Length: 232
Image 1 (cartoon, rainbow, N blue to C red):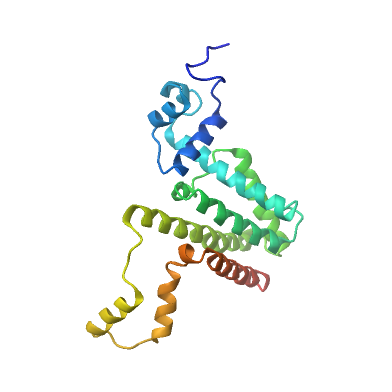
Image 2: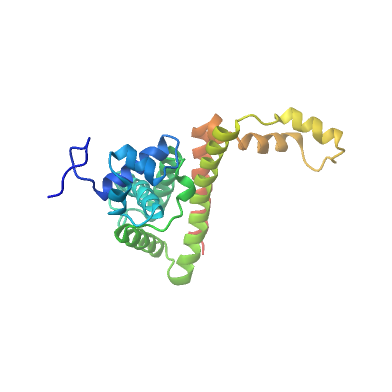
């Protein structure tokens, strides 16, 4: 039995490294191996005993978020391999968005290939099962997954990017009336109504100003995409 590192009561495990990495991301950082080792009261070599690179560590932390998404989805719909396929996809999309907004600092890495073979295989099997129960198989299912993933995960990435950008650069930007004055002074022709321009401008800050409405519109868009699948 190896000796415990000073300041520790348990031996270091991969799961602890991944969890601490996610915690440090949530706290506002993008931790280095040295920062992670300091937080865990171990040497960097102890971390490299479990992971060969920082990339693997970040992948493992992202896996934790995806595992959280799958767990929440299962709690909500029951067995996702048997639950209504549309309900499963809508619920999965909602919890993926919520989880990656909660952990928005790590969301830029959300597309990382899962380090866990089990998680990767489960995810692919789940989507294949759900799309086949919607009447889509083979290349048609692949195309449907592309549409669905691009919308759901792209939406989560955009909303998280807004949070990161506002935190780093500040939330201030020209108001709608200022933009209207600039448009007039620049001689931009009236090619659209003022109400439509105001509505589009308001959407940019919706995830922060009215997150409930933001999620409501997200779900509406997702359902419209899924409705299109069932008409194929």
